[in-house]
Every structure is written in structure tokens, then in C-alpha cells.
Image (cartoon, rainbow over all chains, first blue to last red; front, side, top):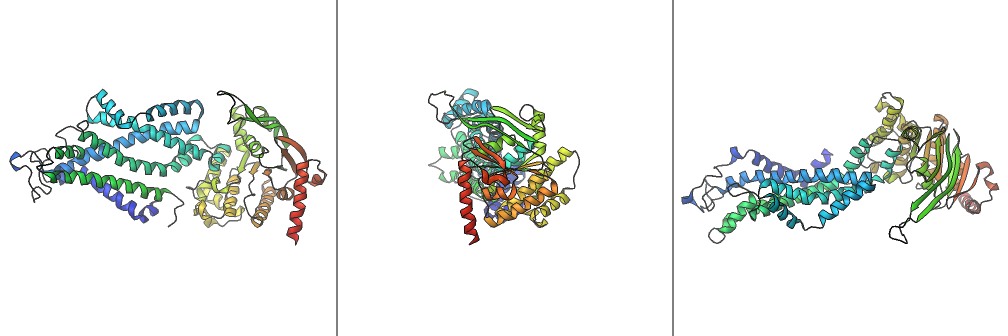
Amino acid sequence: MSKRFFQNKTAVFTTLIVLVVALIGILAPVIAPNDPYETNIINKFAGYSMEYPLGTDQLGRCVLSRMIYGIRPTLGLAALTMVGTIGIGAVLGIMAGYFRGIVEEVIMRIVDVMLSFPSQIMVFAVVALLGVSVQNVIIANVFIKWAWYARMIRTGVMQYRDKNFVQFSCCVGMPERFILFRHLLPSITSDLAVLASLDIGWAIINISTLSFLGLGVQAPTPEWGAMLNEAKEVLTSNPTQMIAPGVAIVALVCCFNLMGDALRDVLDPKEVK
Amino acid sequence: MLKLDKICVSFRSERQDKIFGHTKQQILFDVSVEVKKGTCLGILGESGSGKSTMGRVLCGLLKPDSGNVLINDIPVYASKSGRRELQNKLSIVFQDYTTSANPRFRVRDILREGLYVRQRKERMRLDQEKEINRLLELVGLSSDFAERFPHELSGGQLQRVCIARAIACNPEIILFDEAISSLDAHTQVQIMDLLLELKEKLSLTYIFITHDLTSITYLCDDVLFLYQGHVTEHLSVKRINETKDTYAKKLLESIVVFETEEAV
């Protein structure tokens, strides 16, 4: 498995980028050249310089430092959203797919209800109900997204549980634990990895969108979407301010999408080199 | 040792006349059969005759609507211990070898699954490496196959691995669900020879589900003809020419043609 991973250039490259970005985010206090919250009104809209490599924004804060600190909420919250979504989705999906019968009916009807709402409206509804905060954005995202995963995982489990190797395990009386964790889960991980890495891009955009609309991460906290929102306000006077967060979001989301594709190739045992 | 007593199986039809209708389609009608220890029973029938359904009932995966499955006089579907008894005694080899093995497992892991069952059953630890090599040798594969993935094996080799896995559980009965039908004629003969050899060595009982009469005459002691869910004939292979069943006759006729062709 690891050998095939290292042979796949895209997988290695994209994973490396994501890891480096995450590391920069973790080491933000060490790396950032300036304090992201320090305002300097006199020096606002400064161009690119040694002191402010990406210039300053409308309040004279260092854009690069804000970008670096912004990795934490952007990437961290997206990862948290995905962990929550996949966790809930996997448990319910496997239950529905493996046990069938009444359990499946109940779970799938709830899923149907969840899927019948447009996702953005649901997010707004949840945020409006619980109040504007980061925590609620995560809850809202998990709340609308788990149903997709539950359905996907159920389909995967159903597809594999009639395969002969599972039938054999049932027939000779292997414990259910073994069937679930050694046969079914690994079989669906490749689909899951693809979907998860595609959707982490979705989560980043979604959190950024909400921040952009002023519903997510709140004002002084640096977050890429929120920074884009601030840049929008000064679109005419300082158009270059939106380049950094905009490019960063596009690049990171792109990276996750490519990683999804590459991971599918890596996790598929039949992929021949 | 394994006995079916008046088994009836039916499935709910996909197309119902009413919205909440319960129209059922019956697949097996009063199927009764007994398999004695050390013998080989062939179950023969055309497509859709209920062979595979019967196989699923036999291996404990499908509870029949009525009737009893008994293993050593213990009812299989009545209790958990009955099922466990069957699980400990019976192993299975499938027709479609492409899905018989988890594509993520190496041959080593595939066999280990069977060994795990044996360890649990016999309550002892096995030297797994040694056992895996022994099993591979038993089915005529060299030990370097242990590191391969299923897609790196040919159909015949993979089917051998599946047989090895079935034997790894140390069963008393092995059920073959069209296990050799999907192989070419030459490999079929090889596998059948292997099966005969294993049967002698390990004193196994075989149940063979197939639509191929040649393999039955080659391997089995008894043959059971299944036609649209009914047992039409149950007789020993030696007297197969005396069959009165029309479907069996048809099969016999086709086999004669096939053999003369091969002779030329």
C-alpha cells in the first residue's frame, strides 16, 4: 500500500502540500512575520515589501501573517467537519447496509428527509436557530452532510455484503467484527477517501462562504473566506488585497480534489503500474 | 450426517398485484435429502431450478419457510448452537472465483481467515506460516503464492486457493456451488482430480451443485435431479442410465454427443 502511494506522484505531491500547509498553520506564531491582529492605520494598503510580504489590508494588518494564522480555522474546521460527517455517516450507513430490515428503513427515511432540503438553506436555518458562531457552522455542516455519507456507505456495504468472500465469512461463522472491519470497511474506504477529499474542498469553501457572508468566523479572527469578505469592501481602492486569500482557497481546494483522484488510484488494489 | 427434511423456500415477488401484497414465489418444494459421511452428492439441475437456493439453505445462510435442516440430528436453524455446529462442520467454495476472495487480501490473509476458524473451533494455536505452506502444497501451489493478490493469479490458481481456504477450516463437509463450471475443461479435470485426492486424504464429504453432468459422473456417488424446485430423481451415479426423469435424459443424451466429439 505505502509502496504504491509513493509511486503515485500526484498523491505524494498533493499530500505533501496539504501537510506543509497544515504545518505552517500549526507553527503560525513562529513563522508569521507580524502579529495578525496588530493594526496600523497609517500604513494601510501598503504594497508588497520586505516587512509586509503580501502588503497590508484596510486596517494596516499584515496580510501574510493573517493568511498564515488563517490556515488554522480554514483547514482545521474543514477537517473537523469531515471527521464529524464521516463518523456519523459511516456508523449509520454501515448499520443500515449490514443489518437491513427495520433499522435500514428508519435510517434511510431520515436520510431521505435530510436530503430533500437544499443544503445552503439548511445551513442558514441551523445558524439562524443556534446563533452566529464557528461552532454552529460546524454543527450545521455536519448536520446537512452526514446523510450523503450514510447513503453512500450503505450502498457500498450492500454492494460488498453479497460478494462471495463475505458470504464465505458468514458461512464459516467468522465474527461480525471481522466481517465489518476487515472485509466491508476496507472495501469502501477507497470510495470514501475520494469522496472525503473532494468534500473537504467543499467544506473549506462552505466555511469560507459563510464567513464571507458574515455568518461564520467573526471579524478580527483571520480566516480566508472572512479575509476575502474584507477585501471585497475595498475592491475599488485596493483590488490586490483579494488575490492572496482567493488564490489560497482555490489552490487548497484544487489540491484536495487532485488528492481525492490520486487516492482512489492508490487504494484500488487492481490498479496496475 | 447432513439432512434436509421437507424444505420449502419462497421469496416475495418483486411485482405485486396490490401495493402491500404478499405474493410469494416458491422456489423449493418439499426437498428432502440425506448426505452420508464420506460420500459425494451431486445436485443437478438447469438454471433457475433452485440449486443455488438449496445451497444457501444447506450452508446456513437462508432460513427455509418450513422444514428442517439437521446436522448430526441437531436442527440448524432452530438455535444459535445449531448454526454454530453447522459453521464448524461445513465450508464452501463458490462458482465465481473473481469475487470469492477479498481483492485487498493477499493469499496469505485469505488462508488465514480459514485458519482462524479452525483455531477457534479446536481451541488451539496453529503455526500459521507452516499451515499456509502446507495448505498451498496440498492444493498444488508453491509457497511463494502466499504473497500474491487474487488478481495476480489465474482462475484455476485462485480456485485452488479458495479450495485451500475451505480446507483450512478443517471441515467435514464442503459445499461446491458450481465451483468448477467457470473453468476451462483441462483445469476442470485437474481440480476434480485434486478434489478426489483431498477427499481420500482428509475423509471429506462433498456436496456438488452443478449443471455439468460430466463432473458429477466423475466425482459423485449419488446424484439428485432438481427440476423447478422439485426433486425429480435421486439415485446413485452407477445407475444413472436408468433414470426416468426427462431432464436427466436430455442431459445424458447431450453428454454422449459431447464425448464422441471429444474422442474425435
